[in-house]
Image (tube, rainbow, N blue to C red; front, side, top):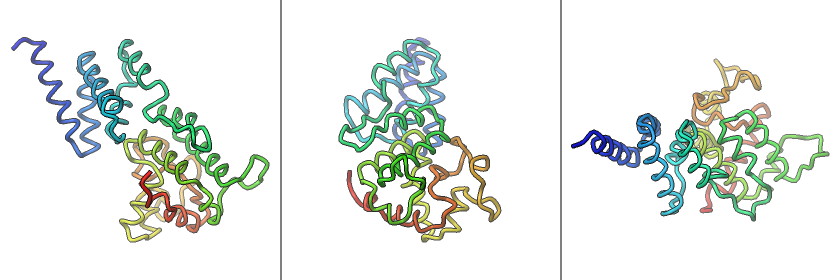
Length: 242
């Protein structure tokens, strides 16, 4: 076996492991290993991403976000150009029937500018609830939650999940809440919104990168009690198939 053939075999073997792995941590590790093989490895990752999302058009998963995140770090101009050609606006094609344009949010999350993405998310939620720019209130009441359209709320959540390796999103927070018998104190501890029993101060005591605990972001009325968050977790979107 030639050296090049050996490299191809190793890369193919890792691609198979990447797709079959159920651990996000393992997927990140394998994707980085493949990318380190240079153009050969990065081409293989790009082909896999194109095959999954464009050719097979399968439902996007955390794996796709991990591959995309890995390839965006490339210094190989050809790979960068091809990535932009296939995914110029990101991995998620936004429905034109949505109430607002979520491309600015997608771009912030792609760049992992999580603080700015969090701020924009709050603005979008207020708009979806019917609060205009002249409204002095920039937070939601629990009665506003039913006004949030399911499709829009789903997309906001999907964008957060996709570009955070599956760590962030309202649905992630909800699942942690349910897993802990809807215990709020356990939730605050699990997602890192409290430090030794004291609520974290915004923004410096929150973690604005993927080293944060699962469910740490986005923030949502975190200092205004549990009524609104409880209403959000009980929104019909989580029981729908969109």
